[in-house]
Length: 220
Ligand SMILES: [Zn+2]
Image (cartoon, rainbow, N blue to C red):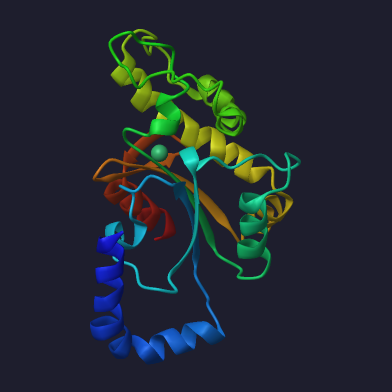
């Protein structure tokens, strides 16, 4: 907590005065181009990774970067997507998973060598229900993944979960409309110090630099 309070004191003293006019502008209007949905994990810091500024990205953070499908109980994630697409008119929605995700680790089969795997969720009914939305990820695992090699399975399931949550995202009516009218693009990313993007044509994750090149070539 002290870190927060000391950081706030520095922000008020050194940062805010220099950016006062920028913040005032943002108070009146924001036009982020991107809705970025990622895990609540403290190691994923979008503004640091992408060197973005206040106003650049609309952020939504959920345990396991889960996006419940449309029609599931209405909640903050659905409302955030609806607002970002319908009101802010974001052009891109990115679902970003990350390495060592604890939410995904909790749904792996029990591994006696890994005390963190398959935690007892009976005392965490809300978490257990929330993690139920990871279930469709299993069908997006690449073939040949060993169910007993836990570290490999963990990474593969995190990536597969990004694909599953992208599918859920597309069930939201405003997202489906935006895609149909080519006013919106959705992207699945994986962060592990470096970022990989899911290439839907090749059905695999590729380095973001490679993905960027392929986009530029496609546009040329
Ligand atoms: Zn996570």
